[in-house]
Image 1 (cartoon, rainbow, N blue to C red):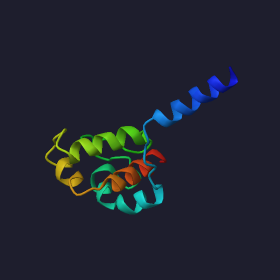
Image 2 (image 1 turned 30 degrees about the vertical axis):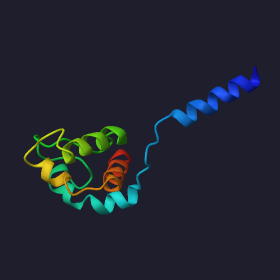
Image 3 (image 1 turned 180 degrees about the vertical axis):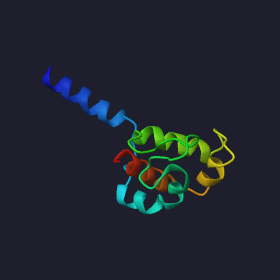
Length: 99
């Protein structure tokens, strides 16, 4: 029974989707452009722009990729996200999640 449980646990880990971990320090360095609308610390002073501080990394990453890949369109965000690599997105998401 112990071997069966161990095998099940290993299979669960192997089949789980892999998420790239972002580097919050790199994200901080990349966030200067974001600060114009979303605030220097991820708290926007303008109501039409959302706060990013404390946003869950997986959610922020998903939304940035959607803007970049054209799945979500916004006249401001879509062109901002277009040049971002997957690593850039993960770094930014890690930075804002940590605020």
